[in-house]
Length: 311
Image (cartoon, rainbow, N blue to C red; front, side, top):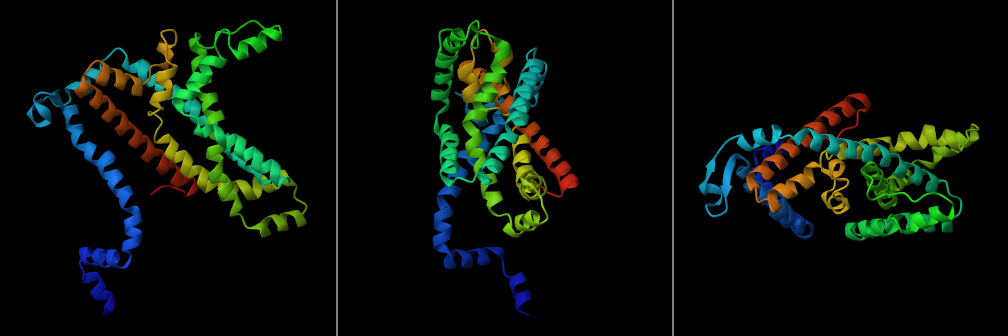
């Protein structure tokens, strides 16, 4: 009888009771809801300008409706192939190259005998995450300049100076490997936490059976953190067309622009520099739709292959 009464109770009343009972917890999450509402949901109102010929003087509602005109304009642009190619190559390169490093670092730290060495290593690898993008790109420009530290060291070794910043072919390598250096320690934290939850009795039984460390890593640690790794991989693939704008834009120069021009930097230039607001919104919306499609596809594949998924 009581269960039937609960089912008949409107959800609004149940929510009200929950808020009255746990008002302190709801108060803690209130700033998050306000942040999401202001910066993530309210801006969705402006998506409609992708389907209009937006004029700031006339406002969103006063602008003329043009349907899919801006989408067609972008897809017929001569730059669309280069933009997608550059974005996908850079994002895929970053994903495949950076994904294993946090796992390897977490496993190594997990088996480190010296607690002092483990703490120092974790601190040193974690610290670069707090370097801002602007400072990081400034460091790259100083270190990799023609007369920078790297080329000075190469000169002392008798190696000819390398034009890191003016060679378009080196742009992707610099971008990806500086990302790995900056993010590996931070991304390893979640794997370290997952490894801490592994049942010690599994390792004790494996040691009794004569298993060495590599066997324990392969048969105990990797299967234990595999669900976490799959979830993070799924989330990363959902942003495969949304490579970080700031770092790419700061690293761009006229010599590498044919390689470094990606969708996010193109949207910035079209929307803010050229004031083509409707076209830039259409490109951004199209990009996000593809990201969602990729996310759902990878999530479905992961669910079928491993039984682990976001949904």
